[in-house]
Length: 186
Image 1 (tube, one colour):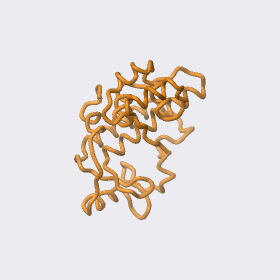
Image 2 (cartoon, helix red, strand yellow):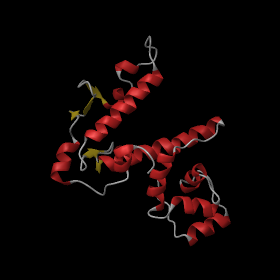
Image 3 (cartoon, helix red, strand yellow):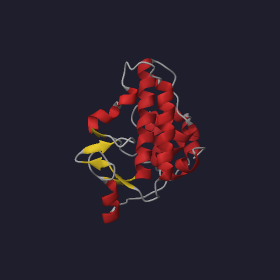
């Protein structure tokens, strides 16, 4: 992966995790079905999406500054966690934090493309996000080689691999020749 430091390197690692110790830690940060904000204040799950400091209409709100502070805080907190840190998904399933972070990259990348398409804007996709997605979707195949053989840029690869754009007959044949099996993303 390009850039991203240890967080970027850790995002690509991990396997299935669990066990009693992992399950015990997975509930950390939760109390009686409520989540704890970094401040320690408990909120219902739906309320955490708009904590007090970022409420719409707040005088002096700085969304860009708040976003920058939030991602830096998240990156620092991620770096502070141990390699085997297990979290619970919204469905209650245990998952390694490193694997969960990959799901967040997938969501941001594919929905970023959806948003760009819906607004008629040029697609954007960072190299780091593309590297994470290619490693996930290609399972060992070389992303640049696959894209080159198909004549795709990074955004086209992601659209085609996630079913956001159709494969033509020649592309389908090349995908099959290369032995690529796309993951089902839901």
